[in-house]
Length: 395
Image (cartoon, rainbow, N blue to C red; front, side, top):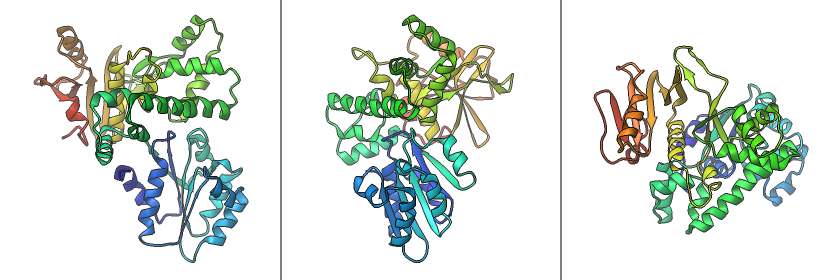
């Protein structure tokens, strides 16, 4: 597995801190691999290390309760600072209390958690002022190229646009095996985890709403549009239930919900939002007859890549005229429009007209899959194959 220095570097600054290092991210995005890579790095300096994976029954048997976890660490640690790695400790009742206790006794504590079990609202309440958190995401394209080179494989941009970046899926050699893995993963992280965690009784209703949302990536939706969709399937559902289900998906890092930003109002428009999936495969496995939604998946991919690059990303809306992204970092702003191709004249006019209401001295960028350079005096065109290899828009 590749070394994901992009994520490890900011964690490294806290190796010696008594703050609890919480590594979150959608299931199977690579949290445990990163935890092990950190452990191996620290192992070069000391052997005062304790590692427990609570998804492994053998490790769970060593410390089946929070009280026994504290006792196990105290019994097995050595003098001096001990580095304690707990992978998925949330199966233990009162695990938060155990973690808060451990950090008090010269332990540097690292934990990971599946998002359906350790959510931001929970550890914000439990660990206020005692933790730092780091979110891990599935592979972006640069990481895919590095990993598949290690595996002796090649992955095209088209493959990325359809099947996304969950790391383990690159180990499979056939599309059929990939789809089977992604479907099983979806059943686990999207359906079963959330249904079990929140004790959802109306499972079919929940699945229908989830399918609608995950197929709506890179689209503006509202609770009303979802309510109308459910009514069309002759099911009843309150708006409050829809809001609750969306919150479940967002808290579990399955989706990002981006509210459009208006420069005129200088505020976010809260009455509707755009949805971006954590990984585009969550859309593709729901498509029938290989009719994949490449256009919206492309926009979703650009969003994920911009987040990886460290940009604060919003959808820009001025009096109903929308630009796909307003990306900001280091006091620089970039207005970004995304299209699969602008070869056709109507598409060209539509995409470039999106910038018409933006001041000329602003940095305007169009990203497409075209090989021809469509840059103008006011708009910079970046080819998708080049954008995916960039570390920042200023390049």
